[in-house]
Each structure stands twice: as C-alpha cells, then as structure tokens.
Amino acid sequence: MRLSSRLCSALLHFHNPTLWPAELKAGVLAGCRVIPNFVTEEEEAELLREVEPHMKRLRYEKNHWDDAIHLYREREQRRWSPANEKIIQRIRATSFPPDAEHLTSVHILDLHKDGLIKPHIDAIRYCGDVISGLCLLSDAVMRLRHKDRKDELIVDMLAPRRGLYRMG
Image (tube, rainbow, N blue to C red; front, side, top):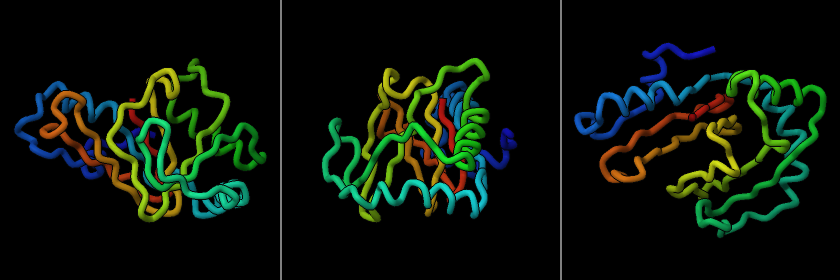
C-alpha cells in the first residue's frame, strides 16, 4: 500500500521549504514511504516476545563502530517463529521489488530512552539501496539532512509506533 501524497506530506516536514529544489523535494516524496499501523498490537507483542529475551541480555552501548549511534543495543536475527516470519515477509514484499535480493539477517536496534542515532550516511554495501524499518514501542522522528547542504535541506519524517518506513 502506498500512502496518498497528502498523508505522506503530513508525515514529512520540510525545513526551509523555499530552499528545496522542486526536483529534489519530489524525489524525497517519491522515495520516502510511511505506512502507519503496518502491524497490529498483537503482532507487535509477538515480535517483542521473540526478541526481548535476547535483547535483555545485552547492555546499552555508548559508542558504535562508526560513531553513528549512542546508547543502543543491537543484534541480527536470521530465524523467526512462523508467525513473525510472515511479518518479515510482509515487510520485504512491501519495501522491495519482487526480484530484490535480501540480506539474510534482520537488524534489530533498541535505543535507550536517552539514546540517539547521529547524522550519518548508511553504507550501501551493508544496507543496500533501500532502508526499511518497523518502529516498535514508540513513535520516532527521523531527521534527514542533505549530505552537502546539511544546515539548509532538512526533512523530518514521523515514524509512528507499529508503522513501517521505507527510504530508497
């Protein structure tokens, strides 16, 4: 499901709108998707039941290898319960073209209430050309900055709880 341009605009806030070249703004609107309530409360609970026992054993880290994240826990998971595998497949089907190759593991990131993801550019070799995520437990705001005009071209994207976001 693709959101209407009106709803998508409500989830994206462009700072300094007069500075945005029309083509670039259109590219952001075309490349960023947010689907609220992608999973139900029950599906969110099922995902958490599966990952929390593993995550609770990890401590919150202060420094990431590329200095992109502060106060976080992370891990990768390859195998899922049958119910959660259906959710993962639904994420993939919604986020990627049918013929796309997928990473074998799902990246799980838990931010502490005081944690943050710092400005960075994801490496295509680790992430591919599409970033897709499911926001669980709380809403989040993702601030995206242009790599060359980072103080001028800024867009905030609301990632609502249980919502799926996709950039690419």
